Image (tube, rainbow over all chains, first blue to last red; front, top):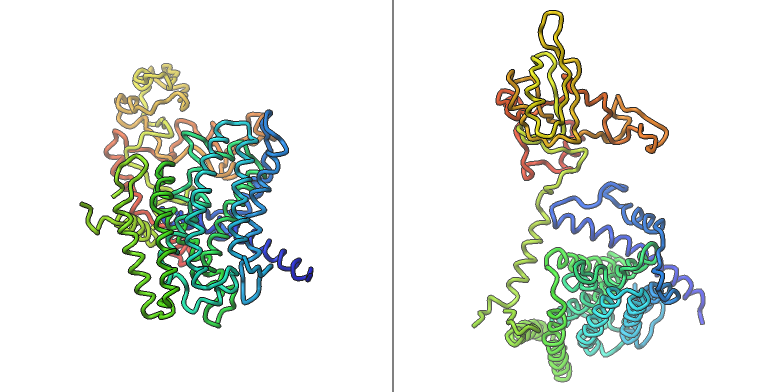
Length: 351
Length: 193
């Protein structure tokens, strides 16, 4: 086993994730500022670039409070259990042809398995806090994350079928054209489900000031809260990286930039999309979120999977000039068709 | 029957609106570098007494509903009333402006036109008293000292409340949307405008 490769890549990945998270925090706050006609953070360093560092120092210096009746070992371990899987996902993300920590032939399966572990960390946090609001918040988050896992996986399967492999490196290589053109519906479902999975607006129901305060992280302060915060952005980074790899061609791009630069640019583009959505939409109610998943996204993902299977089997998806408009048309027809059937939990028509 | 326009139109319209915002000017102000010009008739921050024109009639003291103004008046050698001391308690003051309206001379008492009775750093406040720590009650950090708030300081900016001739001299109120951005201000400063 080549330990040198593992060691160097682990250090690089750690640096990438931490610096990526710091950049995202800055980029999101500046971006939201621009959307809301204000400058955003601009005092710490040029353009406020040192703001995330200042935030980190503040969090580090805060007192670490643990509730008297908390289950202390579990309370302590929960942020770690949430953070480690968020980091581990990057082991199979290719930054260039073969430039990845572990080229697993079941890369996608590994990602889905590892990223689901975060739910356990959240449940540990909610349970061990000995606070009913934390527990309710954790239950709510778990319900949401477990539900959205299904359309998420189904949407990814479309890309897997087109590439004929579960390895992310092979999926990138298989993309003569980015799969977003052959799987537009898959991309939309993936982005929606992923945003719910990482608790981003408009699905950010793990916090609700009037009902459950800050949800499962109510009783966390100091560095442990910082770790949850880090997890949240590391998840966002991983979601952007997976979307770029599966649907936008990953590291592939014109040769004037190296592969990793293309990947980073695509990650930033996907994150900008998530940011744009956050700046636009108000949050939903929990029953609306759940109904949207089970009654709209899941059937849509199943239909997408079925139609992709048909297109792949008939060989239509190899004829790009025909496949791209056909897939786009199918996406529009399926969304409109299913929207007419979709009702929210309360029985009120959405449209 | 929902039309085809209904599907996703709201989502798209929302995204379009926020995207348009990206190119617009900021409407927030970078306080304390930038300050909006307040209304000419603003009632706030200060009570200013004008020693020269005051006839010591105590009308303002009587008009004050909360007793924030205290005057000590005596007769001078020429039998005229004179003010020995005047104190204004800004903690009590409700900035109702009744003292200004009651003044028979029409120019002896004003409301302040200051943005805030604080300074950015205590070193910028020339008369600040400095102590070794805030707990000794004398540290002038972030607040003007009593000396700087003497009621008869001629230099303090006065509001135009109930004083039309004073209001005419004051600048127009700046609306948020017309305010230049922080970036523009910096650019202008660099170009020496």
